[in-house]
Length: 336
Ligand SMILES: Nc1ncnc2c1ncn2[C@@H]1O[C@H](COP(=O)(O)OP(=O)(O)OP(=O)(O)O)[C@@H](O)[C@H]1O
Ligand SMILES: [Mg+2]
Image (cartoon, rainbow, N blue to C red; front, side, top):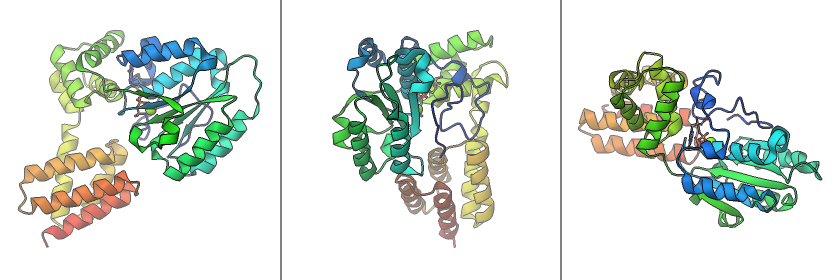
């Protein structure tokens, strides 16, 4: 996993997409809000954050949680810009907690970064720590010390998908905000605004279809809008074809190959879907699960158990490529 050094507003790309697209020309970046007031939905949270940043010196550490693509990183970046102004770049450090170098790396970077204290032009330095829920409990305990040791000069914004994985002593030191997925009308109106600015034609059914694929993940919705626009107008039909119906049917193909014992071919296709088409490992498993149901295989329950087992292993941090390959190999034995 990459780590981002001092924050670079232009290059920050959603982590689930960085492997499949470059940031240049991406609408998610072009239309990323730069002020809290521009953030869609999350009204209560934005109200509270606006109140907090009105008195920056009193701002507590913050903990943002919630699902993907709903504005957590965006809100953190807006706070940085709004409080630190032109010093934002120099006084903000963005770190990815799940970086393989772990808590030692976090400690080193925070230490270096917090060293030059006594700034007269900013109330504090800001440290944005993304994927904090990927840290082990021990690492989080170490992080708690780091937060305490630097509290005089630094504020932390911790970002997590799953707040229940954050240890209690950290939770209790932060003001916590739970971001929710974006409702249909807000996704559609945002997509409408972007379509207008990009001068692309869209119809209601097309935008609704984008929403349905995105499940309230605005990043996903905007990416799908952009992908569809490269085919033509935003109609239901175009959305469906760019949403990768072909890709889900490719997963059906992977299942068929694996069950037929063609493990190498199945693995190659799986890797292509993930590396080239940017399908996430969890989506791959979701589609595979759906494909198994559709297949009405006589050993359905056994196959579903396999998928669940590997889903769990990946969730707790095992290497996805190795796990998915092992899953395919296991499927290859089912019909033997
Ligand atoms: N509430 C929102 N208002 C406006 N744009 C949003 C909102 N949420 C997401 N977006 C769009 O999606 C992109 C990604 O959002 P962001 O990086 O804030 O997601 P996130 O919640 O941090 O997701 P993740 O958990 O995957 O890191 C933004 O650049 C922006 O274009
Ligand atoms: Mg984020």
